[in-house]
Image (cartoon, rainbow, N blue to C red; front, side, top):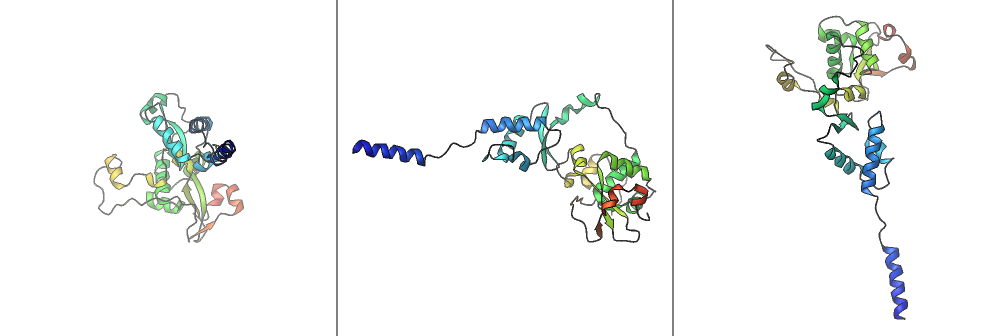
Length: 235
C-alpha cells in the first residue's frame, strides 16, 4: 500500500508540475534574425506574432537594445517600431557609399519643415508661412520621397488638399514620434535660429495623428490618382 501511495503521489506531481516556459535565449535569437533580415522596422505586435508564445517581447527588445548599445549597429525605435540602424557616431563612415538621388533644395527643406510642424497644412498656408510662392514641383518632390502625404481636403472654398508627414519621414530622420522634433530652445541651441529672434516667435507642437480634423474631409478615391495641379483645388 505504501508503494502504491508513492506511485500515486509521483503521478500527481507530474500532472501538477508547471510546464516549461518559452526558451528566452531562442526568442532572442529569433528576434535578432527577424530584425536583421527585415527591410522595414517591426512593431511589437508583429514580433509577438513571430516569437514563441508567452515571450515578453518588450523585455526581449530591451535586452537586444542593451546588447547592441555599444556596437556598430544599434537597435532603435523609429516611428513606434524597432529596427537596426548604423550607430549615429559612425554614420560618416558610410556617407561616401550613399548615393543621394535628389538633393533637397532650401525651398523643399523649408516646405518639409512647415508640413512637419504645422500639419495638416495646405499649399496656400505653406506659402503664407514662408512668405513666398511654393512651386508644384517642390511638393511633388516631397511626395515622391515618401516623406509627405496627402491627408484630406480642407472644408474651404476650392477644397484644397491638406498635407502631412509619413512614418517614412520619421524613419529617415531617426525619430520615434513626431513630437521628437526639436522645440524652439533646441533649434536655437543647434544654430538653426540665429541673430535676433522675434520675441513672439513660437514653434508649434507637431502632431501627425491620422484622425482628420473637424475642418478636413476625407480624400475621394480618385484623389490619389489625380495630377497635383488638379488636386490642389483653387490654390
